Image 1 (cartoon, rainbow, N blue to C red):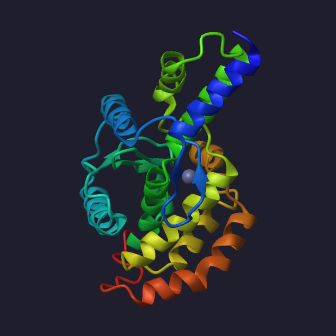
Image 2 (cartoon, protein in one colour; image 1 turned 90 degrees about the horizontal axis):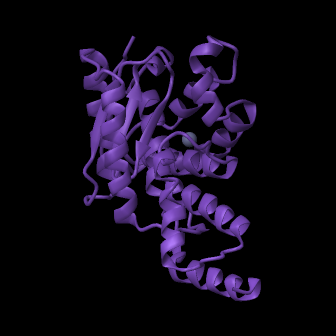
Length: 261
Ligand SMILES: [Zn+2]
């Protein structure tokens, strides 16, 4: 097949599947996978993670995640999600939310969390990645690159789907998020936590802990997928007035919530 024809087919495929606007941020994004397909991949990957890591029995951490998770879930407005919140035993300081509302927080991150509101920062940031379908977007771009490099020899629905779902296993935390996705998740997450009644200032106190050089080996993974530093904290400062407006209108206010230390 001629390259120009392939290109037209590619454009058609993109045109047919890509029409979506991210909630809250209103950015247009490329998506070759459907919401339902991503949720299916999310559920499968979540089951794998729960097999790989022991589920925590730490009452304080498990109760805190359930409490905060329910509050964030309420304002996420995705009743079609089958929400789940699990603390996984691991020294790694990380967390993720897979498509469909499958949230996991590794126990290692709790050493950097002093209260419910800081935990809400982590959970709402991860939930924001899922609501904005960043996983599906990353898969779509990766598949496009792959198809592009193949010159679309056998263009059609089959190879496109194959290329997209070839990245399904990396949906969760394998591919690093781009800076654009990180900023978007911070901004959406901040609004979510404020709506849920957690004081937005907790986002700053939490991220500041990752700007320094405390226990670098333990936070290595989180940092590699979530670049921190003064730039991130400065952006969160800029967003505070907008988030405070949302917080002031929240029907329930927890402030910094329960102390966890
Ligand atoms: Zn992130």
